[in-house]
Picture 1: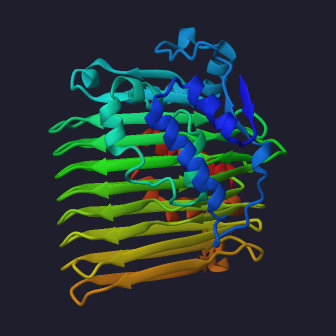
Picture 2 (picture 1 turned 60 degrees about the horizontal axis):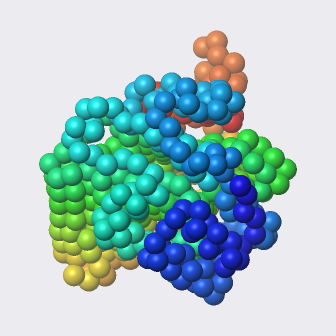
Amino acid sequence: MEIKGLSKENILKISEIKEEDDFFKNYRLESFKNFLNLPMPSFGPKINLNFDDIIYYKNNNIDKKIESNWKNVLKPVVDELDSVGVLESEKHMGGMGVQYESEVIYHNMIKEIEEKHVIFTSIEDAMKRYPELVKKYFGKIVSNNENKFAALNGSVFSGGSFIYVPPHTKLDRPLESYFRINSRNMGQFERTLIIVDDYSDLHYIEGCTAPTYSDSSLHAAVVEIYVGKHAKCRYSTVQNWATNVYNLVTKRAVVDQYGTMEWIDGNIGSKVTMKYPCCVLKGDYSKGTCITISVASKTQIQDSGARMFHIGKNTSSKIISKSIARSGGEADYRGKVSIGKETEESDAMVKCDTLILDDISKSNTIPVNICSNGKGSIEHEATVSKISDQTLFYMESRGLSKEKAEELIVLGFLEEFRKELPMEYAVELNQLIKRNL
């Protein structure tokens, strides 16, 4: 089944396919009204999309059954996912979910995590099995009038993950979701909702890829995360979308007292990326961290960064942004840090480093830092550099080729990001970086 074009009728078709109750159906319709009234972003890269040309829902699995055994998934799909490392990655995880086009096709979790009463499933399954829990948080952290693409997601969302970690629960192995776009003009609009309850700990990993077509595709996801008191959540993602994909994502976490939220965010592919993971530090002594890398090659614009809103007292945040521009690409940092009037003894640090590999690429740093009281502090530093001829000469004199020398310099530049990833993901990132140099 395929649904193309954006209309009220098509939105109702998606809701009917999902067998949703009135709460979610009405949420979609309200989101669609907001979408029609909201303007396109007034900042960042220009977005050239015809919303009527996009496929908003596609599923070749008529019974929509989510498998827990790869033997029951179509072999061409399994082979395709295996070729990009999904099956190998699962061996290191506590649980794995895979979305192909508009639906989650595979989900599995190891017994040890099931015994801890952790919920890890698709958002649609959670809406049916845990409706009150989902409704308590759904759309509360990211509003459906937040921006045009959050409203679009609220209208046509399909697939995505739901995770609930009960109080006093620590997961020793990460949970992972993988998203694949495999069609021309395809839009993917997954919805991820994560609740890490008090005194619990979760590491969630996300991966994304798509083949290259001449026609543009759209990825417009929404991620909402609630981090409870004394809880911790780490959300790691490395996206390697093809260079025909618009990657326009809204991600936000609300962090309670003594809670910690960490975004580890890598952007290698896509035609245009606009993504600014956000922490709302609501509780006293809460902490937020965002470490990002962006690699922009020919025809690519990576417009990324982070947002930190300090509301509670004695809160702290850290943003580290690493950007690489080459072959005419553009890698920009865009971020906002706000320390409120009632936020006492809070501090924030922003560090932006850019490496430009030639004379035709560019990078911009566009920070907004607001400190509204005399007891808070914000530090900001930014550097832009090139690989010096002296450094290359020294490394070449030690027997390295110019290409190998540049590769080692770039990998060293990104070390602060790579060391935050699980080993298997760090190895994958190395390979992605090498292929993009």
